[in-house]
Image 1: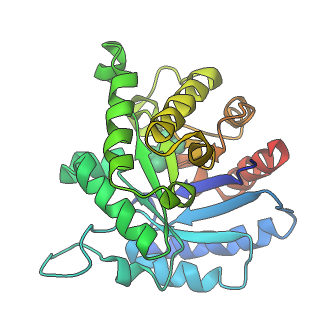
Image 2: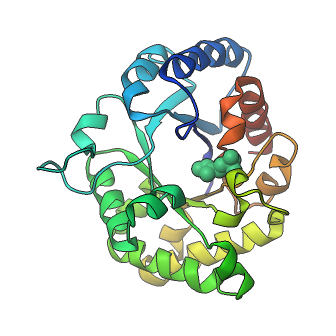
Amino acid sequence: MTRRSLVVGNWKMDLSHKAEVEIVRSLKELFKGVTLEQTDVVVCPSFPSLAAVADGLKKNQKIAVGAQTVYWEEHGPVTGMVSVSQISPFVDWCLVGHSEQRAITGETDEQVAARAGLLVRHGITPVVCLGENAEEREADQSVDKVTKQMKVLIGALTRAAIAKIVIAYEPIWAISANNPGELPEGDEVAGMAVLIRKVAAGRFGSEAAEKLRVIYGGSVNEGNVDQYIEEPGIDGVLPGGASLQPRQFMEIVKKVEAAA
Ligand code: 13P
């Protein structure tokens, strides 16, 4: 089966509200010249900018909006968190389990799985981030870590949900903010994509697992994106820093579309 390609730009907390709104203007202008047939494109601004960015992109059929996380309960006395009904007017996508969120909030694999299930029930596509840190890589534990994260996630989902979620393999050591000395090779990431689908197949069979989209995140830019998306099992990328530069983001998207 053919899975659609995907590029998700994670803006993190890097820009002011004003800058987030300004980027939308440049993106709209730049993407006028881009034809997309096989690729979904998403940008994930901060919570306070979701409404403005969604409004700015309303008539743009090429770029969708995602949130950077969501709380795992529907509502309640949870000061400072944001619920699914609070993001749903503005987004069709949502990151969950990003390593920066996991580190700050101590989010567990079970909580990540709960968020993903909740989003699927609300018709929002979760982009579930997982991957090992530098110490785990050193200790040769990458496969164990990703297998565990996937098992907990898959254990909380239905077979139908598999086609409605995305896994972002994002090794923590490869994120630009962590100053990686090297990045994983395309075939290394492709091996992880095989592992991720194998865990899904273990519960729901290989036909369902083939529908699971897997993307790569970690210092992706227009110069290195090819090595990842040329691998058949990798369906796209999750750039952070590079997504803050509209022209660079567009070049990444064009390369992903061309490889699709
Ligand atoms: P960088 O592309 O800046 O490494 O960020 C990756 C990331 O964390 C995206 O979620």
